[in-house]
Amino acid sequence: MEANDIFDKFQSGFRKKHSTESALLRVTNDILMRTDSGERTILLLLDLSAAFDTVDHGILIDRLRQCVGLGGTALQWFTSYLSNR
Image (cartoon, rainbow, N blue to C red):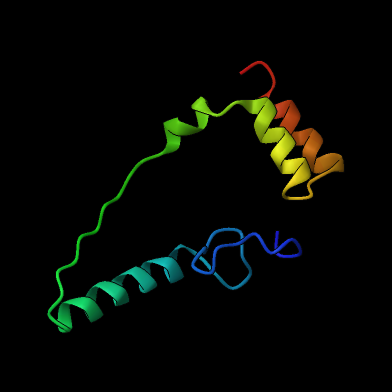
């Protein structure tokens, strides 16, 4: 994913030297900075775990192959995992 430069600059998952802790620190810092400057801040958290079930698995596999550059065993694993779901 890094080789294809598809990470958002603020993405913490699946990146070296990034974690949920670094993401939480970033969000907390942004909220505190905005609050200190007198701005109003809203944090909206969404649980999208069920949204994965609404994705067309064929399209997902094609995008993993074409856009992400995934292939070989990794792509076969995703294809196997998503089959008959």
